[in-house]
Length: 239
Image (cartoon, rainbow, N blue to C red):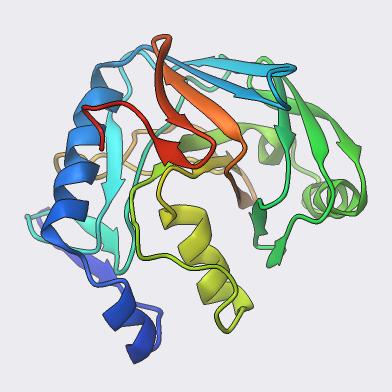
């Protein structure tokens, strides 16, 4: 109905570090325009050995750039990212998650590579080391098949995000959602109605949980055009 919400969960020091700059906001909005027009998302990982493809035709782009500057907008202060919610049963393929990736809400960086097999929009197999086992146990505890389904996917646009300063959940989340050129992929609940331009993704998945995974060592494509590669935004429209 036009109300605005800005969530702030950082220390004063972190707020100063992640203050939304004009160039970061412009980069985020420019990327959202590209995302919104795209119909397919493709992620290549594992040094080219794994590929995950999904359909987002008709789904809006969602942004976070740290400001609730228009009626109806929701945002997280200190964030800089773009995402969209693929059609719920469209994702198929495999995704290799390698260090320096991170998983929230496990509140940890990945120490050993692991592989997710995804079929018809849901994780069907988790293989790897310690983090693979922890992720599997975390998802299993909800006893909800929808917890394994795709939620949203995109990339980070913030150049001021660091790794490791202070540790803990706020630092991990800033890395997951913000870091320039970083893949962000989520599983579980995706209910987030579009309430303003580039605010809300119109996902339809209702689940008992939501988990975010962020990583650098991937190539991210929209309609077969390379957008991000190995932690860098390479598409000139999105830089």
